[in-house]
Image 1 (cartoon, rainbow, N blue to C red):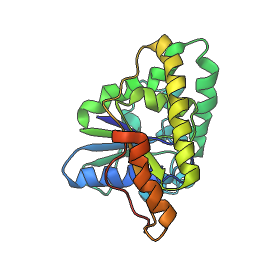
Image 2 (image 1 turned 135 degrees about the vertical axis):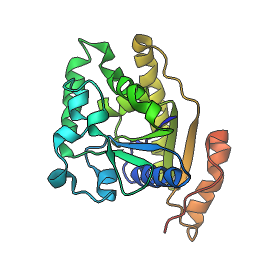
Image 3 (image 1 turned 120 degrees about the vertical axis):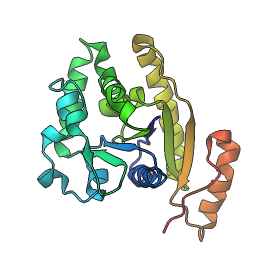
Length: 227
């Protein structure tokens, strides 16, 4: 499975969810690859690196997305967690946004580059988790095209609720346009995960309880509490 953890609002616990899920699955005995596709490098930092000092741009997704590398094997590194590998990120990765935006007009398959790269190495893993930027840019669209499942973290707060609904609507509209050119984007499942739930807040608890009524079976039954 290739799972994209995505929301375009910062502070949704996107990276926290990606990292803890990757670690949990590795502890469970699965072979996991976590791809840090966010130039902020927060997931990379979680694994003990100072991204802009200890990670060279050539060790990130950047050379592959720019067509300088033909496979992703060069960027995969081990971590201190058995069974968990990482493709790191740093601030230079943001340059891929400009590159992809520049060449997508002349080469529609540019948005499928990440998908093809993951397809070549995913036989080595049971689960690939992508942590994209908190924005619906070129890298995020590439991540959505590469994924076959989507997990959307959503804090139990009014702004986050409406932002997530907007994100889902915008994502649907954008992917419909992309699909007309590149073919269908098919997800095995789309799920919303309520995060950062403060059980001492009556408003947050109420929003968490109302979310399944508004969004149905897409909402996972267990929320992640704020600690």
